[in-house]
Image (cartoon, rainbow, N blue to C red; front, side, top):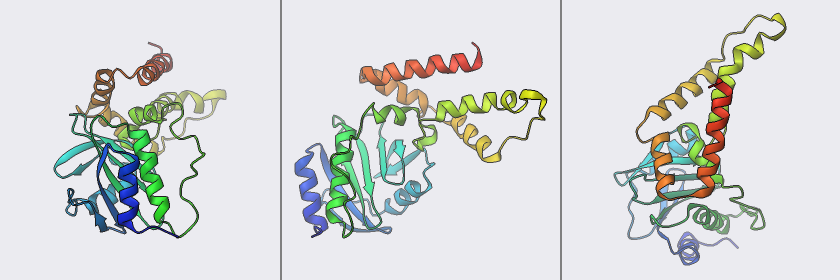
Length: 231
């Protein structure tokens, strides 16, 4: 039997103590929130940014959180100024937005938030608890995703754009025009790189956290980019 939002949120906060505030949204309306968090003014924009899956950040209670991952099922964002994290999970019925303390780990935070969503669902389980979430550091994909869209292929897309002309012209074929959508994605990627709170901010954040796994993955991407551009 599905849990009511208050019970589901209580269980979430017991399971992950670094999550200290939670809101449950249906549509764009908040149906339950903890007493210490009022995001009624931000709920509509959060939902819209999540639905677009191409926003670079979300504003919550006046704080800017840069999006690390944004898919149909999850939203993970962090304040590069160290003001905490926003973790969201959703299904067709409910969206749960959690605020996590700065020292909290976002992957476990997301897993517990997703379980909270599942516990309220009147349909089949939203999250298979046996699934191996967070393997090979999903947060690496977060750090590399362009515009917070969680496309770990952000760097690869840049390579794709750079090599598009060469691939298309192989065998003497005429080079086609660049797909406007692809061009727009690359432009968004470039804007994100230039943004002081974009790529540079992410890299600085994870360097400060001394996250060996993400630093190692960044090094691989750096080497791949150099190889793509021949520098």
